[in-house]
Image 1 (cartoon, rainbow, N blue to C red):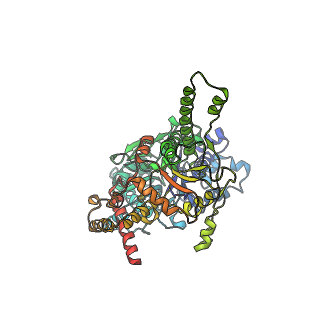
Image 2: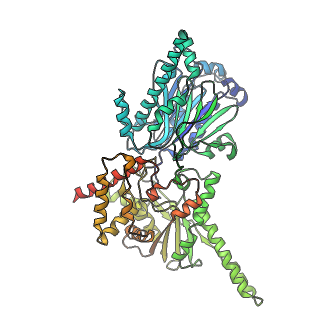
Length: 628
């Protein structure tokens, strides 16, 4: 309904055979490049602001370029970067285009190692200089580093202070730049360690280079740089000499998957993407484990190594509810079950009146949960039918039996996503008026003043579109009651690990709780939560407590939901409006392997998350007080 921005998507490919092998078997040496394009397009849902790719050529001679990068901004960035790459090949003869040896020796982006990135900005910083992959150049091939990731760090300030204290000077105060310098610094140290070993063995010239490149251990680099990272991440990196890595955070917050056969190694943010692009089964695709790294040396030998000790796994549940593609076999079933879990609370809201209720969904991400909800209601209706048939006994009449059997769950495509607001329509009433027409309705899809309308969405975070568009446009159908259903629980807290939810005022649940406290004369709860939050500003983040929980503590979920309804229902709405949220218990039951629920519960898996929510609450209170 209100698209959340997810941090990013990553893709990495290592070809394990020489380019002529792919030319002979698949008819093109561009096999790796083409697979990278597909991996990125299939993950387009993870980034629509920018894209970039990097390539390393293993066969380059001294004086020849061996590391290439292309980046672009905008929703069409994937198409643009690959079009720019293919520009290098447009003047080739057919013979040259299919000469893999010529390509390996002479053509840019004709390499064995590829890395792609899709970007959604969560930092507010934009422009081509913030588009991954980031590149750190050096005359030593092994010291060149390209880095990209799906991540957000909560402790950039601490890391910045640490690396500047060591004498480093990052070009920008941004997490990726700082991470690049940090990893790059440790890579430099690893190369210099090996250089000293080579010199001690009295090697000279290129023998030193080969000695270093054959022995670089990126596990050493990651073990000395990544322990300081507080946040959710899957970071991928390439060196100029052909090593590669992908490393996941110790809590398993952000997702990462890999596949290997005798031709290729692939890493991506989502499992079904690898399945589709390489035509392999789910069982052949492996999950990168918390704190684990996939490591590739120059020769293409792969190993897995534990870089940081795994913590209690807190994989992001929003990946299951919303972000990841629903084509994943497990995610598809989980989303259906999330819909099924809502049958009982919805029945209560419609007084069990299925005969006069129409079900629908907000396009398009809630569609799978909608199917699950329908299945749940069909099972409920079948039980009713069985009970009614049994109650007829032996004296049943055909007409009565037909009436029972003909009962159906009524569903329609009621809401239609009609237009996308353009960014040049920026201000005030004009934008609000246009926002009311983002969705349209299917007229005649329910009986006016008689039918209830139940409409499911995957999440209700800000509620802006509900208030500005959805409820008002649905009310034109004149339903007796509108029940808005969220397949996720109430979003109460900011996220700091990759989702674009960072400030308190974004959350309609927070606004509802604050309004209830004001209404009931409990302002001292707000003041005390602020005082306790402010008092811990100077403490180490590991000692901080999330006192924003105190804002919600006096109220039941139902009380907050009722207040949300009041805040979101536009003036003049004729239908009665209700909201049903998923419970946290149901979410955990459906997604037992993805228990990261901090945006719902306030239970942040890292100390940095608590520090950030503390800061967000203080900023909110102080900004409100400044206005008054």
